[in-house]
Length: 240
Image (cartoon, rainbow, N blue to C red; front, side, top):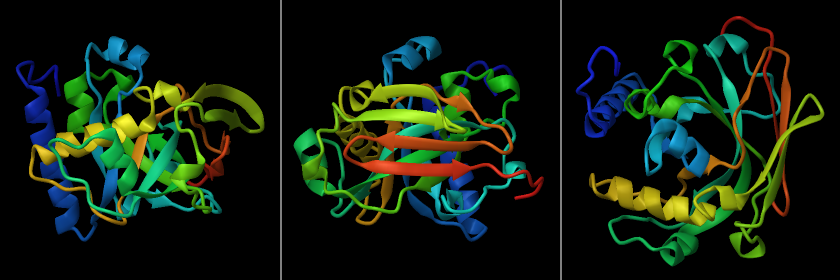
C-alpha cells in the first residue's frame, strides 16, 4: 500500500484497519482484544519508528493448542512468543499508568501469536503493517491462568522451541522494559480514539524474541518461567 499511496500516514493506516475490523464485525466476527507490535528497540530501528503499533484480535483468530492449525489459513506465517493479559477491569486512556494497568489484569497466560502478511515477501513499512491489522494471523493461548502478582514480568524468561530444538530465547524486558508498559501504552493509544479495553478482553503484549518462520508440520512451544508453556502445531491441510 505504501508504494501505491506514498503519502499515506500512520493515522490513515489505522483508519483502514478500523474499516477492516468493521467489515469483519458485519460478517459476524467480534473483537476479543488487541495485540501490540513493534515493541523491541531492534524492530523499531528496522522499521524506522519510535513507538509500538497495535491491531485487533477477533474471535475467529483464536485457535486451540490441542489441534493442528490448517496451514492453508495463512500466506507466509511467522510465530512469536508473547505474554497475554486477560483483563478483569476496564482500562481507558489517556492517563493510564503502569500501576493502573497492573491493577486491571485478572490473569496472565502464555501465548503464541502467528503473524502473517498480505504483502509479498514481508516488504512492509509501518503504514503497511498497521493497515494490515498489525500483521495479525492467529492466537494460541495456554490453558492455566497465572496471578500477575506471582511473576516479575521484566525478568520472566522465555525459550522458543521449534520441533523440540531451541530457536530463540529472551526475557520480558524486551517488551518496552516490561509487558505492563506495553499494556499501559495500548490503553492510552486506543483511549485517544474513544475506545476502552474491557473486562475479559485479551491483550498480547508483544514478542519477547524475534519471530521465526512457520512451516506445515511444525510444532512450536513457548516455555515461560513462572507462567508456563503453550504449543502450536501447524498442520499439513491446505484449507482453513
